[in-house]
Structures are given as structure tokens and as C-alpha cells.
Image 1 (cartoon, helix red, strand yellow):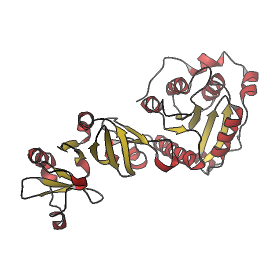
Image 2 (spheres, rainbow, N blue to C red; image 1 turned 60 degrees about the horizontal axis):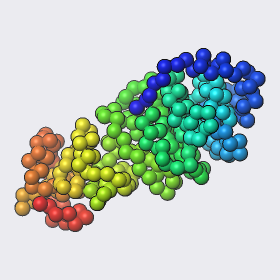
Image 3 (spheres, rainbow, N blue to C red; image 1 turned 180 degrees about the vertical axis):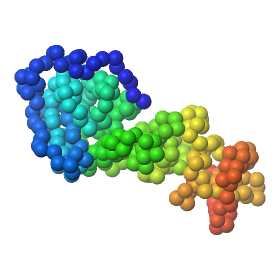
Image 4 (cartoon, rainbow, N blue to C red; image 1 turned 120 degrees about the vertical axis):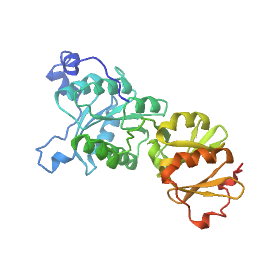
Length: 313
């Protein structure tokens, strides 16, 4: 979700700084002549008031084969002035800028006619949910590793490719993790690279209640988030999820079939050879929801034990 501010980026900051002050705030630039091949690569702006950190970030970014150029700025005003005078594919901005923080800069950039993709860099995950709600492409937690920076660049590259393709929703589904149905997102721990990861509903197979937490089983792996399964069921109903058991919420759009068991319960098959138990009271609704897509599972699943020891009642 993007937040739109009512302001003219050029007028709002162009009058505050002249060309001389812009030059004094810029610590580096890698602008060169642009070939047709270079045009497909990313043009970036890195923003941080800490010059050593900014130089390190710029070094990470310039080392990527998908990056054409990296400009840098050490203040919010300088960054917004630069962004208002030329288009950037992406902006990497530090959360703790002294004039305007990273989220405020993100909100202002969202108001541009062609907003750049924004990656927020921070020392903790306190603001991660707010950043994603404002439309951030990614959220990097320091200390940043080259691998994590590469992952953020890959996400940014996908978003830019979608925009260059004309923004067709079908193309977006093919190259990014955006979801056109509801805009629901799950912020989860990013795993071995650190930081965070953003999951959209269609990438999730099922969710399992786990005390005060929810286990999320997705294409990219397994994650643990704090929350209640009932709340998740209400949120994800529009995305094709159904509560099939007191401990399980399944994505019916990823279902491969259903196997009825002799005691009136069932096993729901999902992609990647996953299965979840279906309680008796949910079988009828499940069969109705699956409708013409209902298929029998492999007979080898008929005697399969309930997953994770769940009761099938």
C-alpha cells in the first residue's frame, strides 16, 4: 500500500538548495555514458548521513552486475533534490536520517510521478512492518552482508522489470512476489541472510497454530510469526484460505486433492507433496469449496499418519 503526500517534489526542496549545496552533499557518483545494454541495468541513489557507512553501501551496490550507476547523498534534502531532478530505479535510504527519517523519505518519494523502488536500511526490525505498508521493496537490517544486499537488488530488479514491461498484472505475477488479490502480506524472519522477508498469500501452502505463534509453510521455507490462527483465517479468507482444522489453515488454491478416511475425517493434499488433516466438521465445507477441482489423492496417502501428530477430530 502506498501513502501519497500532497506536494511537488521539485518545488518542495528545489528552492531550499542550489546546485552548489547539492554538490557539497554528494559523496560519490558512478555516472557514465549509457549504452543500450546499460539502460536495462539499475540506476540507484544511496542515502545515509554517516559517510563511512554510505561509502560501504555504495561499494556493495556497485559490485552488482545488475547495477549501472550509484549516486550518493548525505542528507534527506540532498537526496530528494537529486531524485526530483532525475529518475532513479531505486533508492537505498537509512532509517535514522536526522532531518527526515527513512519512512518520511519513502512517503515523499511515493508521491513522485514515477516513484523509485525504495529499500530501507536500519539497525533493527522495529519499523519493518510500517516500511512494507508504505510500499518498500525490501528492508535491510545492519550489519548488512553482500548476500543480503544482492537479495534486495534482485527484488528491486524484478519490480523495475515489471514497471518497464508496462505494469501488466500477469507479468507482475510472473516476476515478483506481489499479490493482486488482497494486498495481504506476512513479514517474517529472513533466515540465514538475516533481515526480513515479505510473503504474499499465494506463496503460502498452509499455516499451523503453535501456541502464541503461527508456523508458516511457504514455497521458500518454514517461518514462525507471532499471532493467532483465527485472526489469520479472517484476514486470508479472500485469498482462498480455509480453516480445515483447529490447528490448520490451508491455501485451497494450492490444493491437489482430498482423501476421505473411514472415520469421516480427511487429508487435504497440497503442492510439494504436503498434506494437512481435515476435521470432520470442516469436510463438507471443504468439498464444496473445492467443487469441480476436487481430485483423489494418491492411494499411498490413504494410510498416512496425521501431520505433526494432530488429532483428526
